[in-house]
Length: 386
Image 1 (spheres, rainbow, N blue to C red):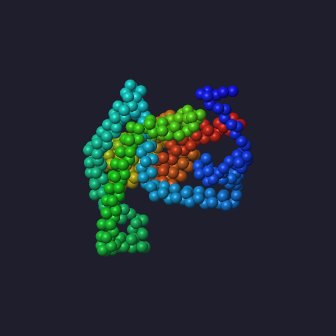
Image 2 (cartoon, rainbow, N blue to C red; image 1 turned 90 degrees about the vertical axis):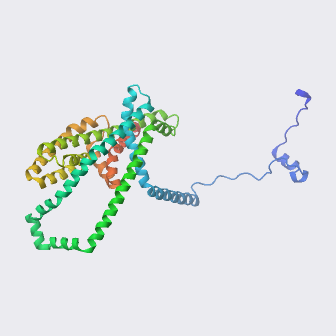
Image 3 (cartoon, rainbow, N blue to C red; image 1 turned 120 degrees about the vertical axis):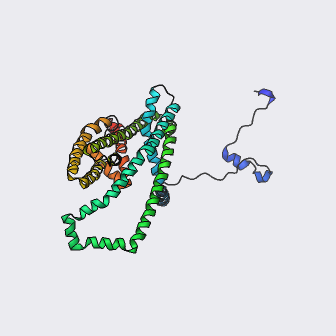
């Protein structure tokens, strides 16, 4: 049978053994006919062999140690990134609010950023001078409060037994006190500069994350397999909504505490320190569990120094307000944000505070909510299907 183009029928291909034995080698003919035969490949390495297991395990341990060391070295930077992500998630509901009103996301993000910058500028130019003057007034009154404390019977008894006042006087008049004072002032100045720099970094990162939040989430979701990407997207969006709702809710609860404290302090006659103390209460109220109590103790102590009657009034007010906050304000604000049992909230806050301090306590509750949701939706559902 002929072949197209007048080509001759190809000769049959000999078997492998025959071709290897009969075909001349490339060295004999002087031409390169193909790769030389190098033998049959051996079996793969035994992954259960002691040497293989030990070598791979040692390499894995060294790699894990290297990663952990580098993460610890950049821990402060990672903390700024995490805080910025949480703040961006907290501002995202405001962006979604404007989007539902017909604005494009870019315009909504710009409007929210302008509102945040305007609020910061208003705080710096209107509230900070008032707080500064009131803090200076508190500092001026502090020696008088200490003198009143000195006449306390318990302090007088301690002074008679341990000569506390003379020791403090000798320490203040000695040369070491001056060195400690200037060193402490330098440390405080450096701490303030560091806090301002970190605040600026957090602000910039928050704005970047807020403007690119949807693209960031989309890039993270694409890491999941295509068969599970829809479910991962739904779970991820739910987590972001919970975190954003918690951050926004915590801000609302803190504002309620600060405004109520401001009104109460003006009513009882502590208007001279009302703004500064209300700001302290609002700032500390953001900390879960203990923040509101610490703020109440600070205000009550200053009120007692002014007048014991005012101190008793502060005790009654904050006892009543904390009940209102714990059982009315907080559940209503957080009802659509996080769903965490009380015991889990306490444990999460304690663990977060032990690991990362105040920042860990702030991030603990939304993190616990995300873990509980993933456990219910992934692990528990899979167990129910078995």
